[in-house]
Length: 120
Image 1 (tube, rainbow, N blue to C red):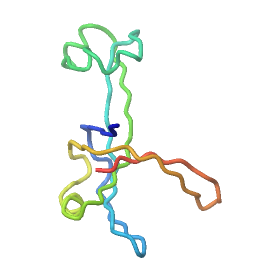
Image 2: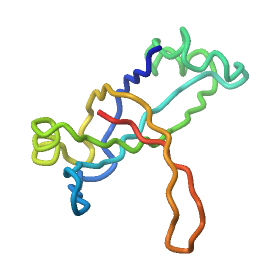
Image 3: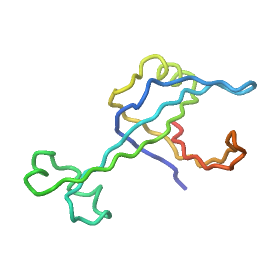
């Protein structure tokens, strides 16, 4: 089995470091990725050949649609966690490699929620 994610995008806010008592600290930030495609193409082809063309060429071909997806990134490894916290800044374009983690938590209103996180 394999659980591996590769993302290239822009950082949404400066990373924060959190530590829950009795657990290792974690650096957390959001990352935005964008997909572009010509209007009228099926969504199944969004990441295909059109993605690799330049925006200029896409503009010649027709109307362009874009979708932004936000990802929550958590960094637990001590060296990488500290470097991420110190040097990664809002707006930076970065590459992230990690795994998907699906979790559940109960919010302050006692409502059970699901969260998807990329563990880098």
